[in-house]
Length: 100
Image (cartoon, rainbow, N blue to C red; front, side, top):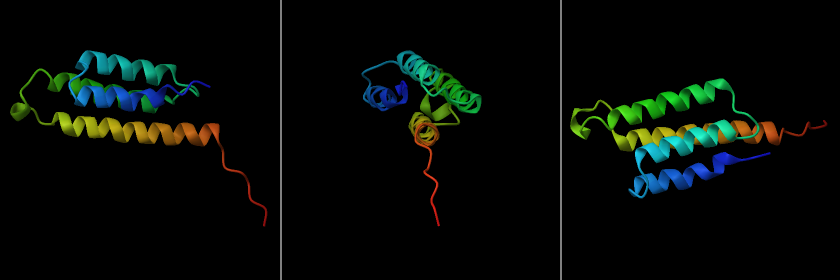
């Protein structure tokens, strides 16, 4: 198993601090999502791609002229990560059946 999702918080933090570029962030997130084991369902990859496309598009405009803020987009990526990690944890650690 290769939990590459665990690397994403570091990339998000580095981006928020200005230590890495948007291109580097997008590449890190795409790579982490695609290389994660167990393989994420397509729906998770699709949502991530939409979020990254919006973030990349927002970089073309100033904060005021854009319909979504960079801060909101980072928050959405954090939410995506939480959901993807929860899914992954359920797959790798299925609940133990209880006996009544």
